[in-house]
Amino acid sequence: MLDALQKRNIGQVFRLIRQYAGVSQTRIGIAVNLSQGKVSEIMRGSAQVTALDVFERIADGLRMPDSARLALGLAPRSPGRGQIIEAVLSRRAISSRDGAPAGQLLSVEGVLFGSRPSDDLWDVDLLTLAWVVGRLDSQMDRRTMLLLAAGMTVDTAASMADPWKRLSRALRGPQMLDEETIERLEARTIGFHRLESVLPARAIYQGLTTHINELSTLLQSGPPERYRRRLAATAGEAATLASWIAWDLKQPTQSAAFERVAALAAKESGHHIIQACTYAYRSYAVTGPEAVEHIRRAQQFLPAEGDDATRAWLLAREAEELAALGDGQAVELLQRAEEAHNQARPHRERAWTRFLDSGRMAAFQLSTYVRLGDEQRVTEASQAALAALGPDQDRKRVSVVYADIAQAQLQLGDITEGVAYARRALEAAQRTESSWGMRHLAKIEKALAARPDQAARELLGDLRATRRALGQSPA
Image 1 (cartoon, rainbow, N blue to C red):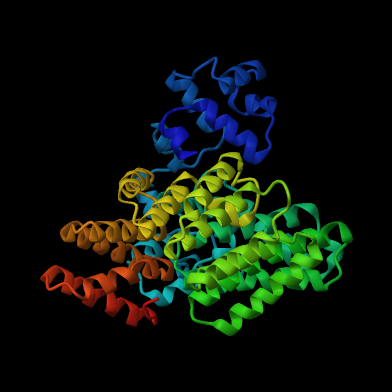
Image 2: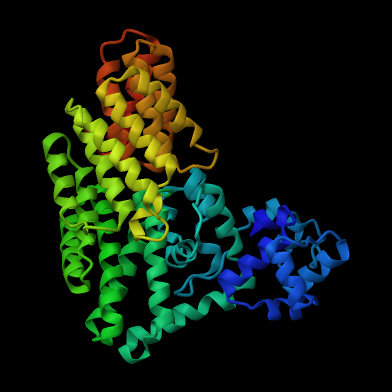
């Protein structure tokens, strides 16, 4: 919305309002003093808004907050509110669902950039943030998340408190469960999957387990059959993520417990593909033939048709692991993964497929060709992967891409470039406490161990210190 306002694209503003608030063209027209026909023309792009007084009328009619008015180039209505950057950095967050004072909530910026003590990670109202994030249709980067957090001001508290009131009533009695509450719980599960690519594991674990406990309570309360399968499916999708995060946090007992929850939910809901996600996550925890075995187990839960995003993910993972074993079949699997991805709709299929964009596929290509030692394709894949990394891409992906490029440069004998990319990979992995990124740096540690260079020795020391701090050992 801020992007549309900054571009003064009123057609997009109206389309977003129609999409997310369900407001008709007639109601928009009444609010902003335009005919329904004119609103339709603006939404189609056949008419443009250029007059300042019309922008003012639209802003007033839609009751835009000052941050939106400033993005549109209009003066704020409330004196002393400051500029848009102050709104973005403001900590006037909406009170959390359990009534915690707004001042006690963590700045999401602090989570992302490490400007706050790590103990504060537990104070984030992730249940609300995950719900908001889960309703987005587009990719979410770090900047988007900052803007979302800043947008949770006291001005929006009234509209955002209602779903939690509904959920509280439903938790007290299944007769209070309704379609809207189910949809919000589904959106919150999607949101947690999206947040996983941006936040450290420990920052979202508590909120995610609270979410799963609420889903479990609703399932045990005997909900109507029309809701039971949907609740079970979203509980399974959340449990697969919780199992992965628990493993990342070195909690194998909890990880196994969540796996069992996911398996039961898959059976109860009839969505057996949830098991595919569980085994896919498990494949990241091991290497070699064991990883390949998990991936092939996951593929057994795929339907004969459909779910192309999950299919593409599993094929790309198999290619990656076979390449590490020196198996040339990896190239064919990678091509099949690309074909499946071209047919996929990651943002419409499963909660866990939201991450699978073209940039992630480019990262899979790079990882596969690096492990195969294909120098020509590594160069092409490196360029594609770097091109897909915008300034606000999630740092977990950044750490993996840079680690693979570093490994390729070291294989080619370019120590200076290899160390430089490895340093960037390490910094990104440290920011997100990413076990995934550190696993990709494991081979670089081995390559650096034999180097006498001062920069290589310093980097090796930093890699080992980071592993100790994260409680990890080289893969």
